[in-house]
Length: 501
Image 1 (cartoon, rainbow, N blue to C red):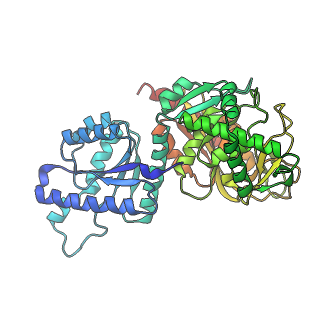
Image 2: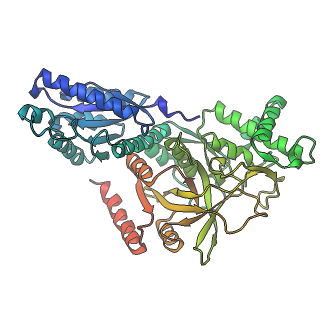
């Protein structure tokens, strides 16, 4: 569902006519080689497109307008091979709506000690050409990613590739549609928010539907579609005997399949990229959607429970920025704690809706009662999550701005089996520890719903929030509560004053 190769990053080189045509030809040849190398890098998830060298204010402005109007272009990588007077860039950068990364590099890796002359020096001027370009970016208060190092180095390519993933997630948000079946869970605060401001800030639109609209799509599912979905269940999961054909609960499996068919058809017909449900609005549905939500997330849809459209959008964004990488992304909730001598841990889960992309083993397909919602027993996938480093992120509407807070964690095995827990789950040790991480999260106003991923990184989330123009807070092994509280206070001042800058 998510194909990052549909996107392009344009490689843009700045120079000027001062140096003559032969020098500019060499600039173009060097730039073309660098663009090709970046595009061929295993770290680059999108296509890198070389653009002609820019030497005038008019050509710069034209390229920026072209980038704005291109559906394929998700951002620029800029580099000043020679000196490029930065006043030439003002008009174009004022108009540019796409994110950009500033690559501070040079074509040659080392100085040719015996041969270096002024011709070489006049060609290879990125050391000061990029500083001139950097000034105008700072003077204009433009958010951008700065990457320093030789273009052939793996760490440089990895940083640019990671940034490109964040840019792709941002591009995916532009014009995205989120289907919201029902409203928020009643009386819940953090899942609320200003949908109009979110559309202005983020570019996606939230569409509200009564659950009856979904029910109609579910009821319209054909027997052939249901049969096909049931067969997929039987092939892909360890299905308990009671749910198999001829089993006493097979009708419940078929009803779960009917719900998934209906949801898929609805979301595909409306070209939606994410959706929400709420257990308080299920009129006309036999079961709370369980396996349907889990499989739709697996296929790239964002999801938020209880009407949480902000988390739904974030899950989708993190699905996009990690597309093609191992590890998975899921909707998640910090559910309960384990205070013990082996380390204070968090057991993460939800009522049903944990994505199978984070499963450690082949999931079990089961049916068990759900003590909330007042509907028939829902069919769901049950599994333990993979172990290893991961990150949980949450986005909140703070009234005057949006804030994203993230916590780096280490997922560990459960201390003992959980035979009576009827949901998928993950257990983790928050960094630096639960006491510090939970306190910082609460001071930040972090939500109880998160987007949880083994593949996304803190750097990607930071890049993403900088592109989006929102606040980013990271809780990791270096976090100290007093310093974190000070950061919150300084951020409040910054975001208040920045509106007048």
